[in-house]
Image (tube, rainbow, N blue to C red; front, side):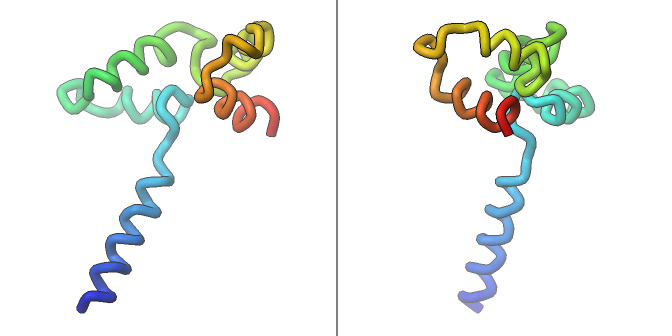
Length: 89
């Protein structure tokens, strides 16, 4: 019985890791389909900053170009990771 619970928990956690990254195109599409009453305050801020204005979606070509022009010393750790994930690979 205990092994079954551990397996269920591990499966649930692994599926949680498959969700779209906040600010990505897939995440924006998911949020557009979701009821606004289900959004958190962080969801609203992320949606406004990455999904409303053209070219600010994390991983978009415009986003990659804009970040490439920004001095590397001014990048946040999240920006560096997102740039490596979406713009380099």
